[in-house]
Length: 465
Picture: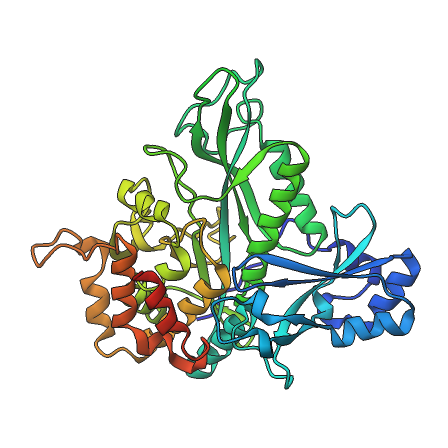
């Protein structure tokens, strides 16, 4: 069943370059970008891409002339793959790769002292094929593999949570732990920075759903120590590859703003025992033939795509912690269980479940003003969005192929969490247990050649060290 809604999903419908070029992003051409550079007298071009560590990287140019500019935009440039993708099969003696710019991704760097045109890039091997080790390649292969296996496209969005820290002064007379949710200035000091970040993201073409202050707050331990408060920016729903890029761009913008204002910013999953940690919850939605598909049918029953994704996540969610819960603090956050899942169950509105079906708001006439999603609540701020979302796509393929799926969903429903039939299975509590979960589902994670050959085996070895 498709969904009909005329609700606005983003806070900025026309990014800066869309307004200036006068075309939708998917209609841009190399000539459009060249004309932009010439018209605005832009001197610098930066190719931005995601390295093997999950961080954004840049390669900068000063185009010598028009021909050189066209070559950069059309062909990209070579780079050292052995440095960008450490712990892979790429070795220094054969390490050349190529950055491949995407014209539709262009934006003007909001932080560069000299006006700089930025293009997001994928990575190609020397023969021109997509580089298997690249996070960009991995998520695009997963997206295509799922669509081929099920006929459904998986879209997503991330909830970017972060703590903002600054030196305490006499003006900081407000703030209390677990009391900051949706607080307004002057009861939070980071409201202005958050709003500036949202406006910048809209200008560079990153769609946003909303932002707000979060519950976490940590008072300074000494007179002039650092106080920390928590905020969140929730992105807008996009196809998986774009959704993963959006999360990294949001974190990049936030870190730049915090640095400029002399403040600290962290997405660490655990700041201090007893206090809220930073989650990185992912919402997923289903599309087919240009339509957004429902999560539940007219009689309240789960639709097939929802069953496939939920059924896959309750089976391999623990294994996906390798991409979504990557530091020791991840386990402290889960053991503390402050709105973090501690057992492998799913349920409606249940914030302690591994998978949650959030409420879909409607107006007084019953018209939906939001879109239904399936929320995966296990990942935290240490997560790598490209790899985690790729893993979710593979989980959905598993759910599609699972026999007795209805029985699995009944067994793992949060309604039956404390049933006499047995307690729910706990989420992994150590890297060793995550490695065990991967071992149990190696065939799933190796499906569709989404991850490069040997990647999953090497991942397990590293986690057992």
